[in-house]
Length: 437
Image (cartoon, rainbow, N blue to C red; front, side):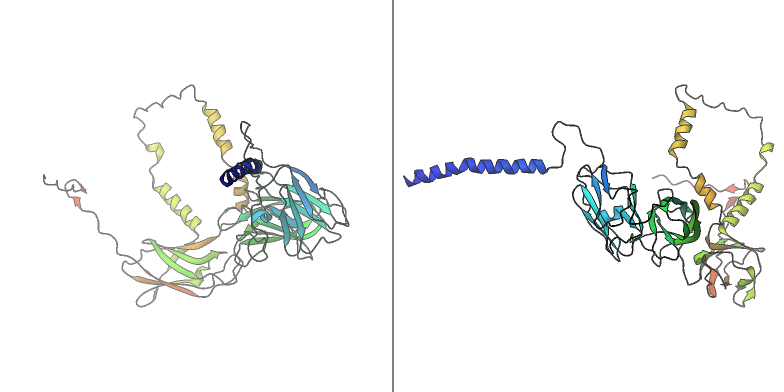
């Protein structure tokens, strides 16, 4: 009887357990972010529904968080804002300016909350910029950002600043550069980042005098650090102003002579520790032949681009005149282009696929390219198996810092032996045949 009662008790608990398991499975299915079975896949990125305060609003007594509301749950992305280290996670996608100190960015499933740790200051125009990169739970990416401008007192201004950020030494656009427009005499400014072509745009700025910075923010802490490349320019902003910034690492220690390389019998290439602002004066360069320190005269000191131009012109002059070539040979007709290939359309499509670099080239032409190498040319060949001392003093870097005296020793190598030739044909002798195996 007791055994039957226990068996009946276990059977009585079975339906309840099945109900609990079914409920747990149902909850798990509801929590699953995947697409419903049989439905089309969700490939749409999250969409911004509302923003509080609204863009263009004047809210003198605003105390709450600024809230960006999406139409679906977005990914938390982890991380947060750090004071000294880089900004990571969701905070990396939000820029609030102008503020002193850190900004609190918090996730709330379908919304992002933003607030400066110093609180909202009265009488200030705020820029709240959401950068591209927000993703939903299905990894769909928001590819276009949004700028929200609101005020805690004054009417919204209408001046704008545009420009380009360029890595001067590397001769390319500064992608993702941190842009600061600091109104004088203040020390905190409006922030944005440059796009994939180094361009930037700041709207709704109060008119006045600004210092504009472009910084290669390598550690992503939205500050200018000591070893990061940057450039700055003073701008008077009325309605619209433009500026081009050529960023480079500012070093208070001047460049020093690092090494020398033999290019050929009459050419040496000197390498410096930093990019130079100008060619050293030739009187500041001395070449001495060892062991008795005999002075050696060189004819010119060139930048790498100047040297390449000189050698290219020399090679072109050495080539035979194309007009004197034998034109009696029958020309081989070009292979016909198949009718089904639209070559004109292919050229148009290919040109459209390439990024437009004409603007970058135009901007780079405004300043000479920096260089960290100097080429010395000599009138007479340098002696093989001989050491030469090269001394350079007073070299300056891009921000004008002067380096101390530098000295290197270069050994001119022994020239390779001439190839053996057959005296009857004046051609290289063929290798003897290998014996049969």
